[in-house]
Length: 482
Image 1: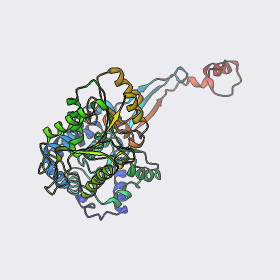
Image 2 (image 1 turned 90 degrees about the vertical axis):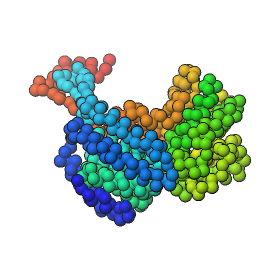
Image 3 (image 1 turned 30 degrees about the horizontal axis):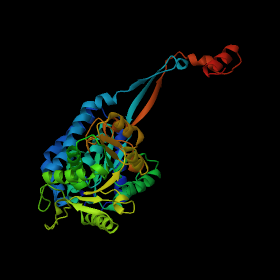
Image 4 (image 1 turned 120 degrees about the vertical axis):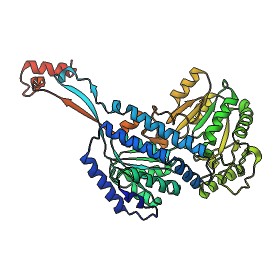
């Protein structure tokens, strides 16, 4: 194993030349082993799984340190459970995914056979956000290794303890020319995305995603963007409000709403609005009887993000919104914990309705009908997730076919991300491409078409010169001419 990774840029000392050197070493290693066997890939995944299990307590504490308050149970549920499950899932499916697939050969090409071979791309560059620093590093890395690639992983500068520890763990289990973790400030990340990777997988904001895409374009590097957006919740008439509120509250309160697929705003009919408010406040108070000094409720990651959310609240209040604070609590424990703020009567002029919230603020918008809800969603940028609560199968089908989003949950929130066998990705401003499940394997593989022929060549009958009646008739027939 190569311990050089542990020295890479925890002090922001990494240069572009250093990263280029690591990339070139990985590309050389890839050329030496361009198609790792299924057993080799499974061994990599097993090694990573064991390392996560061995270092679980240390990573949980590092995350808690970076957030200055996140429950160990939440980190286990949101970071480790999906990571371990995904490793297990990919290990089970890998041999099947790697098999070439036979394809149809038309009569005009016979005798021949055709198949698709799934070949690793090479070196994948992975950019990790701060909100789930383990899961959103491990998920893309598992996909890259399962597809037979090598990887360079840029961790977030906003989770320094977790990023440094993850770099050390990876350096202890993998050689530098297989997996390298890079730490550093935003300047390092910007240089990272200019490198000529064989693929870049970026998870983060839409604004930064545009810069990443522009940088990748200079090298014609294909890219997967996992972004975000304002994920709506549509509430219909025929589902119990207590169930709706509880499921939405859990999805919004996990990690204090700092989740790319967290419910962003509610669309509910006027006659059910107050019932939702009451049920939501009750659900939150049941899960979190208080926010002050509650170690089970996650803090906002840093002062900058905390101030951004406070600015949204003040802007909404100044522009006429009514705001209900869960428990009417004032935070006096010196932390950045922020109780839920339900924002009533929001308008498009408010910043909270113009940007992805990424925190425990929840605008509630009155609608007259499901038609109006669908129109409201469709008039705005396509979100990463959409949530619909209602039992009517026809309306569910309308939601699925008449709206566009990265994914949908019917009568639930968040859980589409945890389904290993479902593709996960955005559409339009919320992203492009997938990296979960078989779709992720395909994203980080080259589907190479292969045609095989023997010594007999029937196509010779169609070779020039086209001076016989037989050739002329055959060509016209095969081309569909009348």
